[in-house]
Image (tube, rainbow, N blue to C red; front, side, top):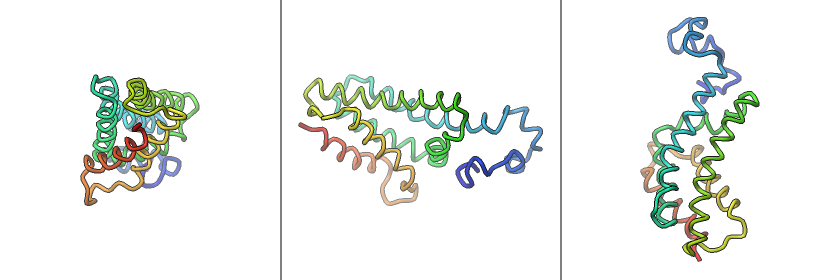
Length: 175
């Protein structure tokens, strides 16, 4: 519902009707509408961290890890598209305290890609880029934008899309 109509528009009554519970009874399961949004957003980002952090920490060459991290992102996106759209676009409706929790998770995601780029530059597999952070943010921006155009019914499976995106990222990082 948050994905279809946006967080501010959806009320507890709407949520209750959708799940067949009286709005007052929802409070047995969640403390507030914001608590529900926070759970969706945290889990949405954690889905990506669960797949990408181990790839970033692996011992393979940086290019292999970058490709696998991008492919992992697309696999997660393919199975959590609606949750991802809410997690990436509606976290700003959270209170400042809860937004900080999300910023911390997002920084872990950024750090996973930073590790790969740093390792690649240090090993000579990647060229010295003017700004490693901009290279990482450009990669993440490209991946996050995929939530807007990816279609599970499209002609390419997520792994193939991941490879195509990785080709572009890696071509920009190669010496």
